[in-house]
Every structure is written in structure tokens, then in C-alpha cells.
Amino acid sequence: MVDAAVAHGLRSFYGPFGDLKDEAACEAQFRNAFLMGCSGAWSLAPNQIAIAKRVFSPDVKEVLFAKRILEAMPDGSGVATIDGKMQDDATWKQARVIVDLAQLVARRDPDLAAAYGL
Image 1: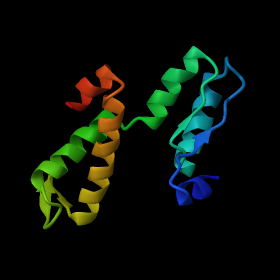
Image 2 (image 1 turned 180 degrees about the vertical axis):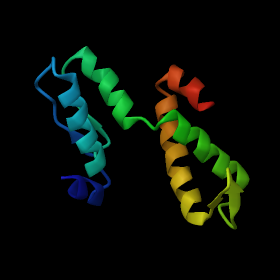
Image 3 (image 1 turned 180 degrees about the horizontal axis):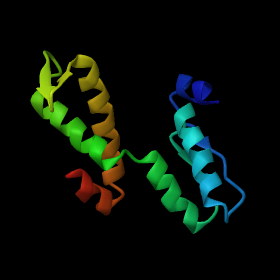
């Protein structure tokens, strides 16, 4: 499903998780969907919204580190050492994806926007 959606320029979303009270299982299912490449998940109850946001939104620490990579290598070329670890064009591309996604999330979530520093 994910591959078919991507091939047509679409995003795939995981279907609803029916056991409204089993938040641990819901999070596990949402995490599996994320790992398979889904962009989000349907939520059937208010308690599932927080779970979906946690699973499908970039982690704050990852965003802040990704921003450091982009700042150190503005055009994505060369290498930089951050916290004793080498960053190159491959990590720059990953950082770009993380920050771009964080910017999309930040447009709709003021709390994450503040946490991301966006």
C-alpha cells in the first residue's frame, strides 16, 4: 500500500485502531505503520490523537540536532564535526528531511513549533 501510494505521489495513512482503551497496543500499531512508511494514522478517539502525534512527529532532540547539521553545512557540501561525530552530505540530506517535516508539523502545532525552535 505504501509503495503504491508513493508511486502515485500520495501519502499513505494507517487505518483506525479499534481497541480504544489499549493505548500500548495502539502505539505499537502506529509505530509499525510509521516504520512501514505511513505518514499518519486515523484516530477513533481523543486519546489516540496524542499517540499519533508522538509517533508520527519528529522527535524534538532529532530536530534540534538536524538544525545544527544544516547550520554547519548550509549548502550540504563538505563535512562538519558536531559533538565529535562527522556529518556529511548523506546526514545533511537526512537532516533536511527531518527539518522539513518538523516545519510542516510546526505550522499546525504551536507547542511543537516552540520546542523545535521554528
